[in-house]
Length: 319
Image 1 (spheres, rainbow, N blue to C red):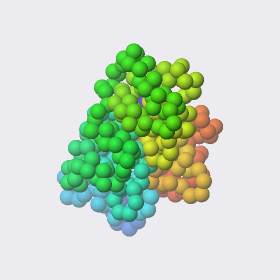
Image 2: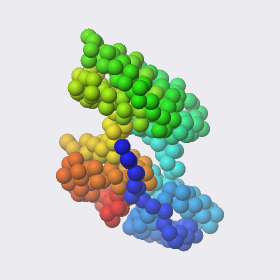
Image 3: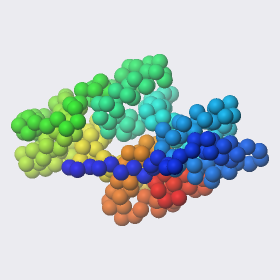
Image 4: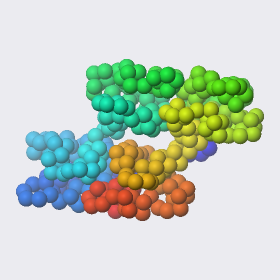
């Protein structure tokens, strides 16, 4: 599968950190706030450029740009803007921490962030999490999850996945058989086998395994997982399978689910749009329209309002 990620947010060119810092300062100075100016600047810069603006702001005015933004903005609009100002890996670590702290655990967020990452991305997250919270991510996860789900996430965060592009067609045949024997071909399910294969294989290898599985069983691995598993284990396995086949479709479905039904899961909406804007948000936008026959922008416009809506639409590329 050729997946060429296309972002929706690109570095500004030309770029002038000094001019941007000055414009942001005047947007927040005095009576009232010019929210549109903040949106226009911050949604049209790459994260690396936003970090330079933040440094310039501190040098020039002796003020913390994030703190100033927090004191001027509010609600979900503030969440978007402050999220944009954080380095991407720190932003994801904060989201993971939020999903685990306090009463209950948001397993869905853990799955979305952890099951979609390469080893390199995972290593960055693990290091950053410990730096930020002075606690190993693995330890925090183990205290919040259990059973086969905990085992799967632990495998993923310890970085056991084969390097990107590693493929072995013969092994793929064997692995497809192992999955078949661990699920459909027996009474009950051997989750350990599913964990081992889906947490270790490179995405390219897993694509081969899924093809071999269909050849062998006559049904897709998704269909088998649907019959064999439930709860968070089902969700995690499906996330890996969907991401292997099409990351854009996986995130498009997540966005759709965040907006369907009563109320909107704003946290999910904000997290995906921010975290994918410099990776593949354009692909996600296209997939959303292909699957649901409506544009992502029209869906977001019907679910959000005000500056919050304008900021999200600007990030998607429809200001």
